[in-house]
Length: 260
Image 1 (spheres, one colour):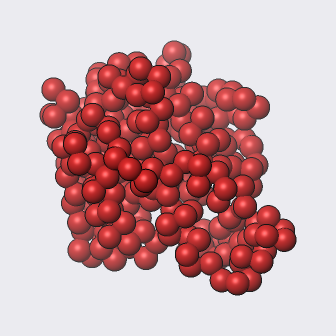
Image 2 (tube, rainbow, N blue to C red; image 1 turned 30 degrees about the horizontal axis):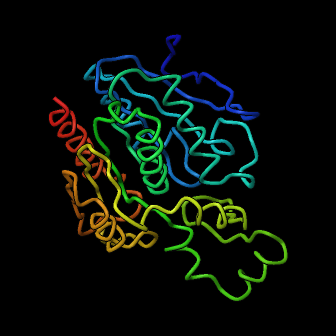
């Protein structure tokens, strides 16, 4: 695995998609950043975690899913399965030893699916912990679909997609029928999720996108593991204020200590 600079991305191919990533060498357990829907690896939390990794000599990998940030590919073709495939490919090709997965929003869903796939492949011992911020597992089925208007449902059926304004970007959020259908096949809140590693969840109680009760429900599906749920009373979905970042770093340090 070649060394990388702090500023220029490296690229790898996953299928026909050109995936951009940045890797910082360091000691174990390392950290792998899994971003949210329409977010990228240059976001506030990812950059803060990278700076912390640099200060502490910790290995860290961050990347953009296809159709996101500096990666190639068409966002409208994205699905959970597609982004999961890319996440596993980056994990296997650009990390060694034990890793802590850091999943933000949709990245929390990707992280939980990675846990399942890694255990299925006999690679579960590479997981040292999960750090999930405003995790949104099953968001297509649980959070978006129940709120769809008749017009949006009609667009999905007739056009195969619909768009809605985003408070986080000038570009609208696009949701496709393929995303919903694939999301149904990737649901994790249907039974117990055996991570076999400690989990720390950070969740804002003023989150308009992922209600904090969704995080509380997730903990009910993690009964066999060491799970910590930290609720931020005035926290929003981004959890990117200085005090939120400080909490995330403390949670990362705690998971490192638990990993031994």
